[in-house]
Length: 491
RNA sequence: CGGGGUGUAGCGUAGCCCGGUUAUCGCGCCUCGUUUGGGACGAGGAGGUCGCAAGUUCGAAUCUUGCCACCCCGACCA
Image (cartoon, rainbow, N blue to C red; front, side, top):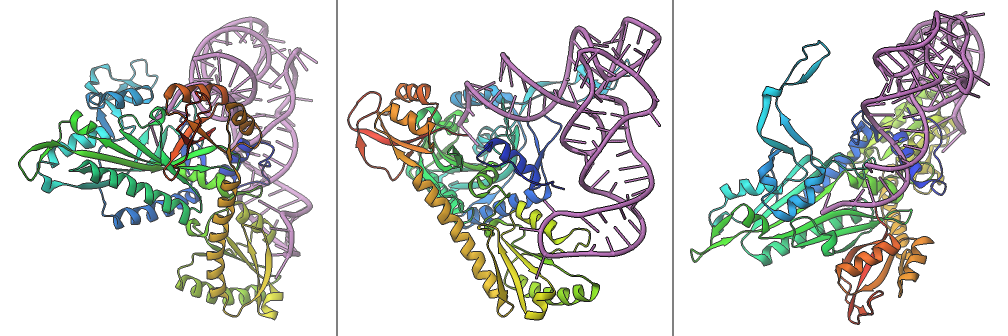
């Protein structure tokens, strides 16, 4: 059970985030370093995210499959950039058996059970999947392969934060194989679009679609597309990536196909993923000092009904009205909880459901039964109104849509207000130190320039926005005809 | 990996500097009663390898040494 009160965002954003995750009952630290326990309420939100994305993947022609957790060590090193990128954060399985210690102190690793070849706990599945695709692909008729898997992966991060960066996390990874470069690029861009649509329409999080620079690119990719979001503290968060992998993995795993003319070609690849990190984005975009704020489309409970009564007769009356309302709401696809727990007072429940971000709260008391009204409270703006019971379920349905829109409008306004142009690196640094957020600036496309800016400002290029066409003078080199890109300090 | 911190009941903590009855307090939990429109109240009750190991001592939550774990800040990070 959560206890009272959160620290204010303005006082300590990081502590606010940690407290919120815990008090809203989303997740907790496990006894294993860097690994979290996702609690039922948090997992219910993840399931909403997952179900919607899964639907969208299937609508775009993808199928789910499942590949092993373990990857033979040798596979990982077949693609040079890939192993370089992941080697430093891999968990490795070296043995397959334990035995009782001779001194009776417990179990120890049995040295006789050493594996011939160590197994890597997947940090991502490109290698094992492309090793498999080699067996699946012979002809252009076998293409495209459009597969997604929902899985857990492990990346042994130096420092972890609940949902944002954990040693083990849940995600989906799409892995597709195509006959042509054009088709693979089209797929990469299509899935970026799916992510952006999902973020904006379901999570109510505005995102900027763009390309990563070479420095920030996925290990083994030709091009990494991303969606970038802005959190309330002005730091950017990479919310999803879609990679055009070229023929790198096909070459590393020798995956070729015969085209219509019988000529052998290497297959073109993409991969794309979003993770439980989206939970972090969701929390840090909408929530306030009272707790979690959830967009209705992702709220496990969209409406909570709290009865207020002084005797069993009143409770009976309220319950009988509530049951009727619930059946109407459920009938139009709205999830409702009727909280008639007698051990908690209404005030306690109000605070609790605010902490948990339930979009709408209905309180029904003797007064309401008499007047045929209910008290309706919105979580997003904390407003309360008294409404007539007439057509209530329709009103609620409309209001939920309204809240979804309002949240998106509010976060979109925030994003717009926090993109600032800088014409010099000093100006950029000033902006980052005061209001923070995204900073637009011209960059000559050079990795060294990018590094210099990072050294001065601690900001990285979050992306080269897809829709940005303007050019100008680079803030470091002075090169004219430089691209306008987005910088930010990031999670 | 560098810096800082913490480890005492389910959770949060006091006690530790300066060793000494039965280890403090709050929340939560159980029982009974009264309550219920913004985190109720009373009475009674249960719950402890004081992170682990060794040492010093008549005596260790407290001192010493070693170890372990986690958190926070930074560096790193698809």
